[in-house]
Length: 138
Image (cartoon, rainbow, N blue to C red):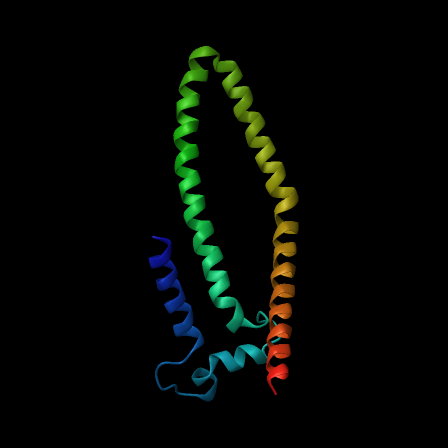
């Protein structure tokens, strides 16, 4: 499943990144070049495509698998806990919802920014290593 999905996503991204048909303007003909000129575009997109697609597809498949497993576990334990003590169940449910809301509200934006900064540094590092390798051969 992961391999097929990776192939489809990679083909879709490469179709947008590399031109496969005649374009009406120069900007449409070379999207990879215009991305390099755009300061808001991610750095080194050509080096990040394969790695990012692998990460995203792998994480989505793992997240879906965990969601199904945790949903089954939740409903199984809900049934047991409701029979033992409905009051305890609703108290624990409220506690879990408040904890989840607090965590998402407090930490999620910072984690996204940190992950973006890490990816950008890794991309610069790979680019620098590529340049060192190219210069060593000449």
